[in-house]
Length: 81
Image 1 (cartoon, rainbow, N blue to C red):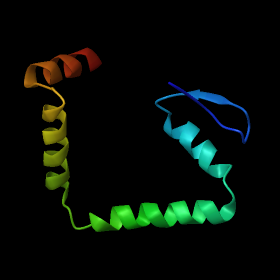
Image 2 (image 1 turned 135 degrees about the vertical axis):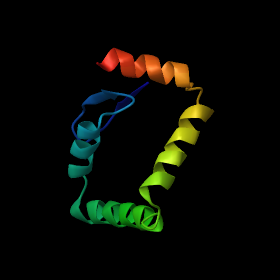
Image 3 (image 1 turned 90 degrees about the horizontal axis):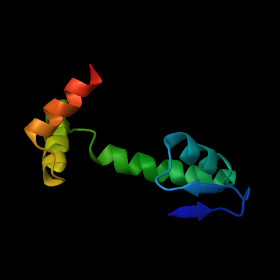
């Protein structure tokens, strides 16, 4: 899937990288950038009391729900070294 934006007529292939998203945000008017920042802050302050182990447990559950098995994880980690 591709997304084209009228701002600069550049076409991006989805999924976007963090850098591409940041560049797009920087092209927004300042007021819209501020609104986006406030929405992000709201989202992250909801979970500020969540400790690291809870976050890691949630990540693990999400990965398993998407089909990641211990064997697949071991293979991925072995390929990284």
